[in-house]
Amino acid sequence: MKDQKKLELITSIVIAVSNCALYSQEHSIVRSLAEKAKDIIDDLIGDNESLEVMIIDNDLVFDNNPLKNKTIHTGSFIKKIHRKGVDKIIFKKGLETAELLKLITEIADSSRTVSQSLHISTGSVEVRLGDLSSITGFTKDEVEKFRSDQVTNVKEVFGVVSRYKKLDISGLEDIVINFISAFRKEVNILNIMSPFKSYSEFTYTHAANVAVLTLFQAESLGIKGDLLHDIGIAALLHDVGKMFVSNDILEKIGKLDEDEWNEIKRHTLYGAKYLMGQADIPRIAVSVAFEHHLRYDCKGYPETKLLKTKQHICSQIVALSDGFDAGRAARPYKQGIETVDLLSFIRKSSGTLFNPVLVNNFVKNYSNTLKFQQ
Ligand SMILES: [Fe+2]
Ligand SMILES: [Fe+2]
Image 1 (cartoon, rainbow, N blue to C red):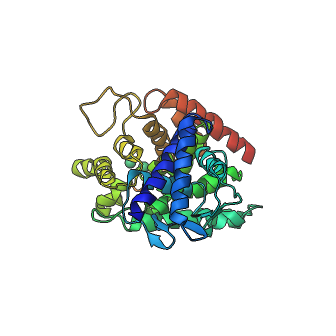
Image 2: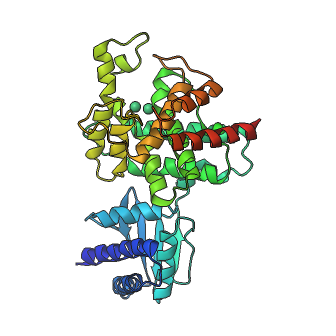
Image 3: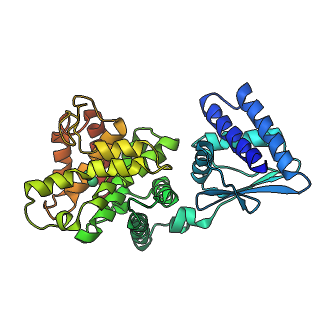
């Protein structure tokens, strides 16, 4: 019975947040959902002094009792408040609807942080911003540590990838939050990109770099809020299908034969299929895994009956990041090329491999960063 109330509370808040983002906190739907949520909170507090809602390992925990039932709304609530760097909300006796409305507005607005009020306090677990929170002066060593920490985080998440295990979505969220925070702190994108170290590390550094380049593009295109986080996660996972391709093929030195090359190409299918089975992953990640080797001119792979249909814009953004980082790194089956040559390759591929609008945006912003660094 109480669990049902808790689910109703989360559902009311999530729907209020969505409506608030669409309309405003003055909208009657938002107000009536806030009032409903306040009544449920009063009811759940009962004779106690407060109600504590925590996120632990992607679960919602009410006053130390994990909520067993999960719905699309509980998942969305966890994602939304996690992305604010919040892991705990305490509602105190005497809560006013206006305070709840303020909280709802702050969750809905991607540019605002969640603040405290008389009857609502929030807390965050320090792991969210990782070591970056302590970086203010960005010494070379600190940025380097930040960069290698993110690659280690990617490695940890990818290390457990198997057809039978659930992907650690909160680990992925943390990496994306860390990169977004790094941009906010004006860390130069060129400093966050990981250099190529070894063949066996390539999978992880490449995933991290494609995420950095994708978030860099997406932010400069004005993408924010949930979509920014989702596209960051999709970028991290774009090549997850390679975890199902044999290392003998991935790390082969020398030319691949036709069968081996076809197996490499299948990572797009393996990745999309794997992500389809992962409930908490943004759906866009499935499209990106499937489409990131399709080209703007509708060539590329995998071959589909939908040829002549353009990729999703998020896949187009990730494809550009992928092309850039793949060219940047020395690969077992391709020698690395210089950044200037790489930018000219991207420019020459405008309209064929990549969307011209994205190419212009990328080249302009990346060149500015290069100038800034000189
Ligand atoms: Fe790929
Ligand atoms: Fe890739």
